[in-house]
Length: 126
Image (cartoon, rainbow, N blue to C red):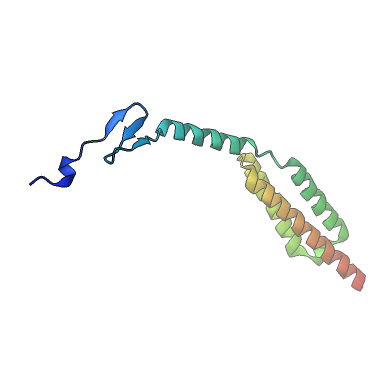
């Protein structure tokens, strides 16, 4: 006795299509096309990230403003954190990885603004 699997015909191949065991024509995946699409998508994703130079300038200005407001005494932890994040931003910029650089620059600005607010609040209580 022959098993049903042995009796079924092997899939035929005709161009970019394959006929399966049920007689249906299905398209074969083209790995080269898939790889090409992935490469193009990756390249497009990398190309759209611009260096966050304006954000860095804004963060630097926020740190200077916080220091003028007295953040070095009123909020030393926050101003130190802002400076550290700005330094990490520069490292990511050197590595040309702009997404984390932008995020860190934004966080540095927020930390500097918090330090500034603490310094202003401390002055108003005196």
